[in-house]
Length: 279
Image (cartoon, rainbow, N blue to C red; front, side):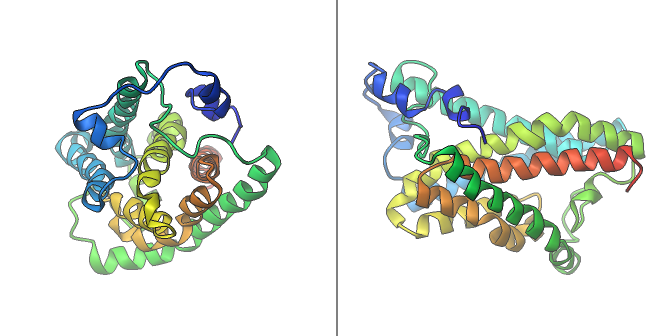
């Protein structure tokens, strides 16, 4: 990822050192959420409640809507994710306003001081990205096996062990339009928000667990995907390098490059494959 990304949201170390804004006294929920440490029950809740809300919104509204207009349910999941993660990002800025007196993420997110040079960043992020791309594809048969044996009872329309099942059954033009509409969302913005929230906001507040922090972050982030519980094991395998290296190197750009890079390339690849009639 570009080294300018963190600067865009107002968190780079230069801004941190030159800003004259002192942290404001906090109280209530803001004080609890911005504490240096989160208790284990609080951290578990903050990781998993967004996933539960995503499933609830999908089942109550989004699935019915997209099926009624003849589009793949993948669009319904994108809508549900947006309706939860969008306000979640706004909540981080609200915490920033409480702390700084302005809409800034300074002090809300951590691992944002860009300690790695661009060369070292690329040297780590590119292999991490390739790891996630290759392993997520290679573990698809495992996902399908787990779904077929344990999760066929779930009330999600067109669910399956492969992500493509959420796109099938509505015609090529609908599939192409869905991916094109979702590209800026599921391809870029939503995984970026997930990294800000899960790695930048939550994981530093369980850093007192030492090496257990990235492990717990990976486990809870994998379980948070309640809409695809059959992928928990595969996510534990292919996603772990992201939290681990962010914790170890103190640079959130590593997991952003890995996570957002893979979702972007996967979505673009899907668009190209459908447009060229390859799938």
